[in-house]
Image 1 (cartoon, rainbow, N blue to C red):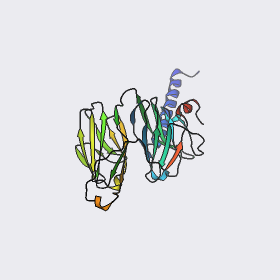
Image 2 (cartoon, rainbow, N blue to C red; image 1 turned 45 degrees about the horizontal axis):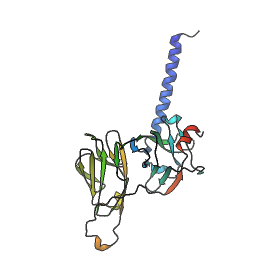
Image 3 (cartoon, one colour; image 1 turned 90 degrees about the horizontal axis):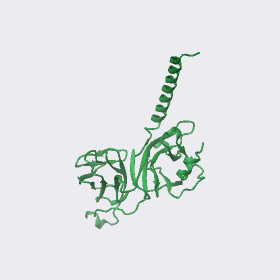
Amino acid sequence: MRSHRTVHNDTAMHLNCLLFIFSFIRLSGAQDVTTVRQISVQRGQSVVIPCLYNQKYTSSYKYLSAGYVWLLSDYVDFSDQRCHHKTVFVSDDTEGHIFTVRMDDVQESGSYWCAIHIPSAFDKRAGFFLDVTADSPRLHVTSQTVMGSENGSVTITCYHQGVQYGVKWCKFGGQCITGASGTLDGASVEIRHGLRNMTVSMSRLKKKNTGWYWCSTEDLQMPVHITVSQKKSRSAEGQQSPVTTATGQSSPRKRTVQLFDLKYLLKFPLR
């Protein structure tokens, strides 16, 4: 008969092997896809989550997966567009190398993965947690879409719950502004902190400032997309453009693919 010590050693070895495999799989896709860590949204509302990916995966399939552990998560490969979903949409901006996940009428908190299908290899992915609240979200903006014009300015107010430290404004996949002022890709950034909000003003905008940004606290991020357009007439070039903010909740889309109902995914995973 095998001794208890031998059985214990074998069990420990198997667990260590599983942990190594899990860690390898977890890290293998972490550098190729970037997204928020945690995002807060009120029940019944909509949210858009951007997922930045390496340009070498421009032609690869992108999808959303649901589940706390990647290995056990449920996903859908949407190459044949076999399903149609009314509240979850994936859009791929192949020029900007960002695909977005739009979730409408959210109801439940959960863990999700922005993922890229890689044939005959581990899929690339990055996970985020969706925190659904009954009351006001812990970090939110009036709109995730802001419009501005060249040489003009925009203002974004991020509302939080009285966070004292770690509040900052970042370019998605780029630098963060943690002080009262700074620059992001040539645009001037000024930040004013209130008791329960942070107001960000970006001026001297250029076309290259179009893209995704986010407000961030220590544990939450809220993405905001800024679109900078050219001025319509030369007569307006010498005038300072008014501060403008968009009122809609939408995101730029190149290709749109509709996904499974997430509840359906959890019950009937595709293998």
